[in-house]
Image (tube, rainbow, N blue to C red; front, side):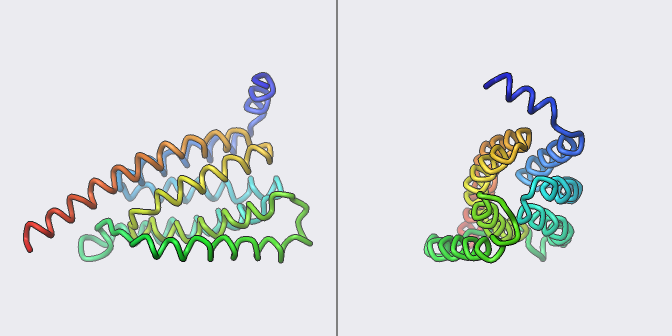
Length: 203
């Protein structure tokens, strides 16, 4: 099994390597709230848009094209200064309890519509990841703390999907994202608590 994994890793294209390195740059900079994360995101997702289409993961391809657009939007939002969206915010848990089932049902429905056009037994997982990722990306752009919790489970599902599709390096990348999700949540939660303490101090 180890030998097969190494062979698959050695066969990884230069394009996929470039996408992985840039994606790591994105998540590291995003966790540190550095606006340059969006430049890394734009380049990485542009490459992945092509790569995923080549291995018949249509929803992942469309999702990464969406990510390219969101990279521009996210950069714009983060560069607006203190008057714009600069503080970490939190959404109450009932909001998430309602949102997650709706998104999963939407993903399942999307897969049913596309099933006749694409021959992929993981199409439902591909579609659910896409729907959840779209909403979670907006959470990142608007600095919603819980985005990191969503990413933890999205990354876990993505790692499995990519491994099943032969994209071993990308599967490893998204497995490593699990740690980044925890790190990002810890960083943003610390800032959120600091903001709350500041508000209480002046109230």
